[in-house]
Image 1 (cartoon, rainbow, N blue to C red):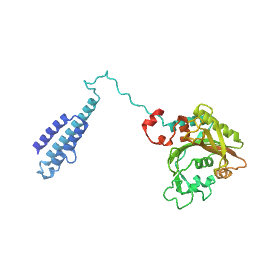
Image 2: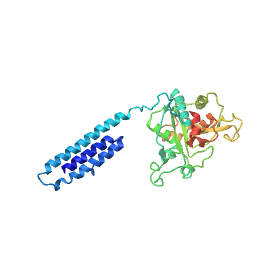
Image 3: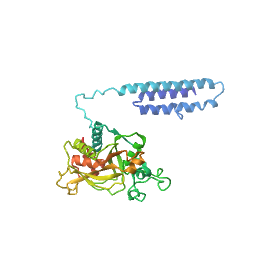
Image 4: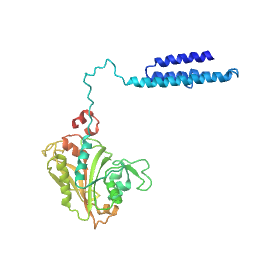
Length: 345
């Protein structure tokens, strides 16, 4: 057995010296001192030897295994040192390849720009999970029990939504407004905050609509907030985003969570108000609903509507980005097409 040990040890030394990378070195380790390696197999033969020879052969085997392990470790260090060497054929004068730089998605950039604008006006940035409950998505926003927005044809419900309390019926948030109620419940008035994020609607996609898109909500609640203050806020936002004054109009509109409610339109920036496919040839495009929070919403937040009032807007972030860059199809922003997105770097 002594000759076998010496033969295997000599063979292992040759293999280690010939190894040129970590992979080959690992193969040598497995072949000789691994669980099924040559020296490990010999170790299993020790009980078959004469009792007088067992201590000596066992000692020789352990010494051989330790020697192989040390040689492997030394070779590993040697290979790592050589890996940092530059080949003599390498030409340092050849120009390198400049790595391509990334950039923010245009919707992300718009969100950051709005955050900066609102921070300059003393607003807090609020964020929340994308999963909400029926209680906050509808009940606390003054939606009646039979409102069609509660149906699966509009809202993406999670499994188990057909049983339990409204606080246990979960869905992907169809809008951000429910999160605003949760914010008011956990903070003390007055409130001045914005709430950006992605929302989900079960609807057919086209040039103006997506199933997953971004909104940007802003809310002021205090004891003396005038309607004109809200309109000034809207014009300030748009002028900051577009770098110039943007004509705005406000039309009466119904939303369960505001009273009075308004459809807030801006002049189409793609055609300059002349009419195009983006604005459906009317020169105006709806960018946000707005109005004063409904008394029932204030009550749901724990406020007295006779004492507090406010102004609310929910900006369609995707549409605002379309206006900023003159893009006529919202689906392009969610296509992950680098040929399109690289234009905004």
